[in-house]
Amino acid sequence: MKEPLLFTTSQYAYFEPALFAAGRFERGAIERKAFPDGERYLRLAADSWGRDVVLLGGTPTDLDWLEIYDLGCAISRAGARSLSIVMPYFGYATRDRAVTRGEVVTAKTRARLISSIPPCEAGTRVFLFDLHTDGIEFYFGDDHVTHHLYGWPVITQAIRDRMQDRPYVLGATDAGRAKWVESLARQLGVDPAFVYKRRDTTTGDVSVSGVNADVRGREVVLYDDMIRTGSSLVQAAKAYLAAGASTIHAIASHLVLPEGALDRLRSSGVFASISGTDSHPGSRQLTEPGSVHSVAALFARALEISERR
View 1 (tube, rainbow, N blue to C red):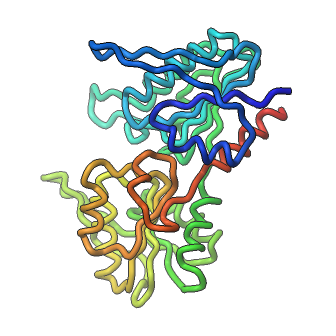
View 2 (view 1 turned 60 degrees about the vertical axis):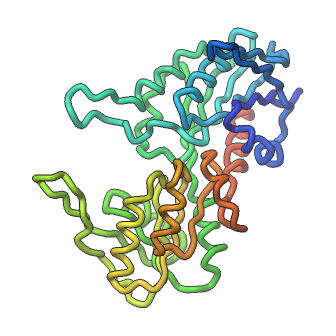
């Protein structure tokens, strides 16, 4: 039986070598070019007929969503036996519900977009990683089976590698992440902590009002699911330092890091280290040894298990 045929979106070419190293695939080439008016040309340069196909690509931008949709439709139309979409980063994950009347729940509309890719004969699967909200996987249509992969094996190992045998506290940026951090802390055998936040009813501004644990003289590893501007991370780190913490390390599942974010985090002077996974192209900004940990093996194992079923 042939190995799965792997196609990769343009943004996730950096992730492809790690996935090849972790699993067995046959590379599927894609022909790309741009027309003068900005339209794109895409062509599957490998025959998908009767093949089990893997499409690798996260969705940091709207263009990435469209590329996955376009390629997924082409793969199905080309007669693939099955299609597995590997999505290390699900864009718009924080837009999972409407807070103000009329707001678009973009996480749901994007899931519906992917769900409109015609299903293949042996099924279409979507593999997701450390979603901002667990319920997002249920926004997909019933013709597409979703698999939500949790990054705790990679995150906990990354923390162990960073901290070695030194004692530390595992901290959350707010009470909303406390349950997840508490679960990680149990696996690591350390104490959890989180900060209390207060919202001004007049201005809507959020401020930190305290820390729930004794962190005096202790190192704190501060976890968040994603680092974007980093403002909440810096705010929380300053609260832990004000409570007596000796050192702060930051780690995240998704290193989004839009332009200028990493510089702001570093210039804040509150972090001894910043690390995370390779789920987002922004992770390539971190070049320090041991700062980026691959989640490719998680996806390779999940794909292998799904193929056996």
